Image (cartoon, rainbow, N blue to C red; front, top):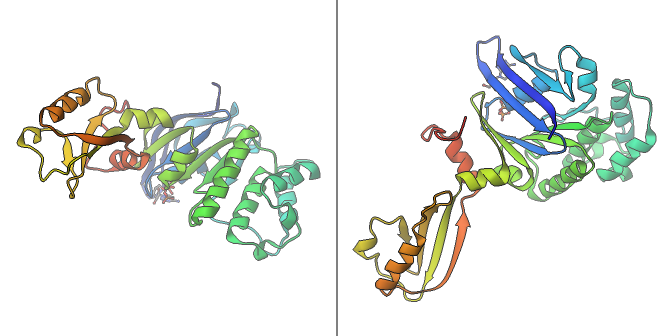
Length: 315
Ligand SMILES: Nc1ncnc2c1ncn2[C@@H]1O[C@H](COP(=O)(O)OP(=O)(O)OP(=O)(O)O)[C@@H](O)[C@H]1O
């Protein structure tokens, strides 16, 4: 698939001497939702700001839709819409005036039909004449998105789109972002919320201390790093696990009713058949069983924690 953004060897050292990005290599595919996940200070905003031409890279290059973001700044920037973390709009202006003005900044001829389409898509059409200061927080965020889309970019960056937004509104935002993707816009979002990446992203990049630890399809990531658990609901509660099982990755619930077996979903030998055989030998019978996969949140915590370095992740 053709890359719509190509980041090659990008590093950033701030004047303070802090190395915020270290040799980033990243391709974003056209039409995907890409989530950049990382803890505070990992370098997410710095990377977005470089791609959008707000911050200069110390080294490396970026192509947006084939255009170098430094040499062909204007054309490269015109392909990109940016919704920054901070809401920044003139509260006295109307929604309509704001999006019209934003479009004008890119030197685009007026296109009321296009702006109407965007406002309708973002459920803002009814509010087009309202002053921005009179809108709710969620609507203000939508106005920021409408502004970012006003010049018809095909790449949209959302920096922490749902920070501080309540759960219901977050779901609305997700729905809306998917709608944009379905209309052909490539979406790159940064987030702290693992749930957001889990819910929305086609691919995920994990960044820590300025280094891209991995880039993977979401399903592949969960499959690759996921540990599975098999839970058995026992017919008869057990007072304790028989000694013979002490070396097994088994835990018994406090009430003795549930046995949980942990295994690596990637391993060829899960040991489940052997476990069942042993349980049968001990007359331990179960009435129900189900398996669960480790969530992206657990995977992420493991990836970014200092205790567990990222050995074996291919980067
Ligand atoms: N203008 C600047 N001058 C000096 N250091 C900066 C500047 N901007 C960011 N930094 C530092 O660079 C590092 C990366 O910051 P950045 O804002 O890119 O991280 P982030 O992943 O977006 O974090 P957050 O999730 O908190 O927004 C941090 O250590 C930050 O303090």
